[in-house]
Length: 78
Image (cartoon, rainbow, N blue to C red; front, side):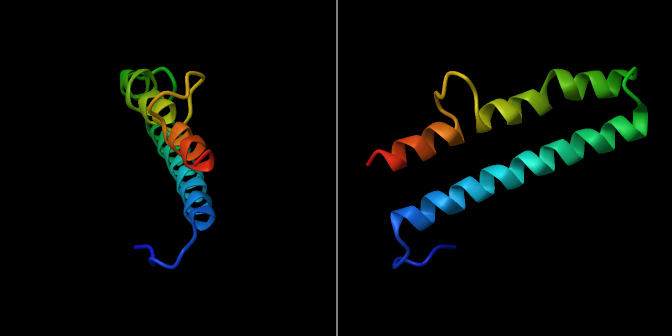
């Protein structure tokens, strides 16, 4: 929860921290799946083919459309 006295800069910095934390967590989750089942298992391929890239793409993609990164950029331009 944020305090109303925080500045836009502080909010932007926190969003960047959250983005980094999510990236770290999804990488950790992928590593756990890979360690448990191996790269050749269908479970790993489903994870790598769907939810892992979806989460990563929602954080930052080349299009910067509708991602947390695009939201950060928009806030920085305000």
